Length: 136
Image (tube, rainbow, N blue to C red; front, side):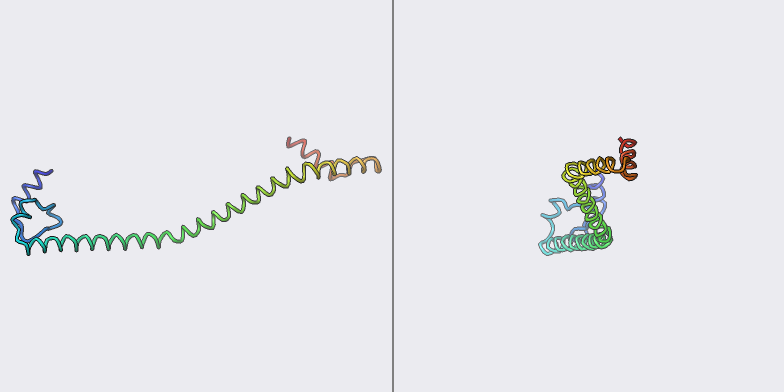
């Protein structure tokens, strides 16, 4: 590839300064180039870099504007997921810390009292018991 670039360079004598599409400037070209022309070549190189950086910045801004909506949606999704996790933690706390140690014994005592008074279990308690037995 370097040979192809050298042949192309040999076929096209330097017009003035550095040309971006022709490739890098050889050391001998810089030495033989007059100061004024060398300075012009450096300025042209910096100007082409400034243009490339400006284009890159513009593209980056366009991408940021295009993805702003999606990023805002993802922020809302994350907030919703945090809410669901908090609800799940609250439900787990309710079941483990309140319902199991307090609620189930009270329901069992109520069921026994109801049975001793009316000689049958409440329908809703019997249905809950059947449901739990079917699930477990």
